[in-house]
Length: 319
Image (tube, rainbow, N blue to C red; front, side):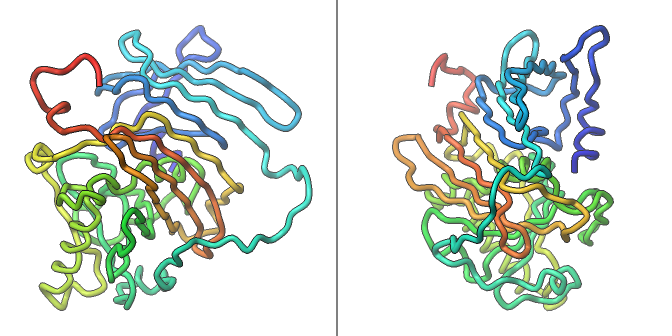
């Protein structure tokens, strides 16, 4: 995935500097590249324009290096990131198996090879989201539990990133291999809106509403069975949103080095919110590979705000 991202944001070093880069704005992307352990603070909303990224070394040691990245637009600091790079190839101590597992247990494991071959799975239904906003979602193939999301505040799904855009609904070739850490970083933020899901408001990223549409699409024509349901969104529909999510902090910890050549590209993601109270919401994200081995964990702090604040002509100075 790193290759696709790099090409589309056109990352370039600023001549005459050691640690400053320019990147274009591209409508496909919502989050950027990472290292191995990452803390992001979103200070101000980014706008569709070029960005300047300045990188500073905070600490360089024998086992890890800590970097700070600052993203600015029009001389305004928009995002601050602190990343710790660790060499997973170098053993630092012993290993042992843990009996940790996800609770409640996820729906029975799908046959990922079979569903990619167009076979209907008894427990999972396939989908893709296309439309007029958040264009990167067109590149994500996902599977949702056929019985729906039955535990309030928990969302489960299987995801695969499609590296080439298709005009039809067929699977696009995976030109770059399977999962890499750039993709894992991206997927920690490419999740359904848990606030819409908790409120069951039918918003564009309400997983309950998406699930109903997927089943309706599949049931409408027998020829649809085994194919990914296509869910369309429009800016007009988005303007009707009751709430919008504003991520304040995002922390990601990578648990192992991912070899893109040794996986099929599928990952399992569980997203959990413990509480949404008066506009404040927490998110815990767990990402596993196709064998359910842990790849990464993440935590988000989110403000859930009234949509009128985003779309009104008069913006309030403070939240």
